[in-house]
Image (cartoon, rainbow, N blue to C red):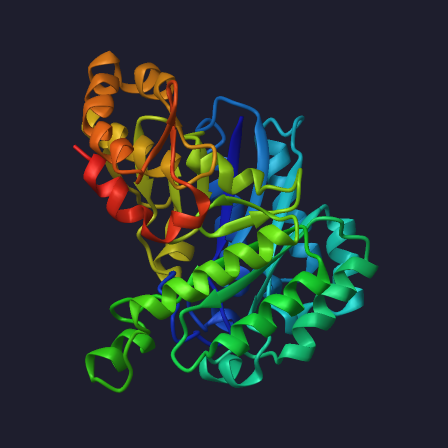
Length: 371
């Protein structure tokens, strides 16, 4: 199976932490971008050999577009790819955009899963992050989505925010569990270079939270959600039984995917590429320009190790053998042995995994295993 990701590169304003490519020039380029996206979908119709199982509208802020525009994009995908097995169609949305009429129209357009950028249920932190909604509007958006018939809702949360006390985080988690979304993604705030937050850090106006505070918040997240029957199936992702994100899971299992739009990545199983263009150049070009990276065996091995061990399913040696050969599976066994002996990595036969409660420190374990 395969997936298609449509990157909608527009926001009304940039959040202080976001390093995804986006622009506030929706009024100038919004219509032209749609025409260019339609064109790119048509020119890439031969990129995926497998049937498309998932479509994901990400951004940016896809909910800036009218449901009719979303429907036309979906129809263009269906006209050019095999979508006979399409099961999950996700749209990322901000709470302030999700009025009942808009939600009803999205459902009619073919969206069957929503990913809502809640981020926090604390008004002070939302203001700090330059979000355009407050806590009450976030909760209302989830309830409106449920009333519109959406039975697969995900919400995003952020922890590790300067000034966020344990009590504030616990209250956000209680609010999230009370709304009972099928899926919750929770990310530690990162200070990326070039973002407003990164610049504040460089100027010493703000600093990252201490490691111990991050760990306490991560453990509160893990225990609160798992006790509420959410499965901690990937470092940053939790789902009620049967509601894992199929689209994102395909990234972690190495399935091919096509990215549409400036800033979007694609992968055909061997070659990875990036449409590294501005919106202005993208809408003016007859065809997008892609930067390509041919993956070596070492690259593929490292990627298998990284993506597999970020999940609760872990890594099975058969995946290494099938993708890069027996010599790499033997290398993994030897390298992993001291980690297993120290309890940093669990093993049962040919399956290796990191306990979800230890996911916060998984990067150091994974890095040790890299070629």
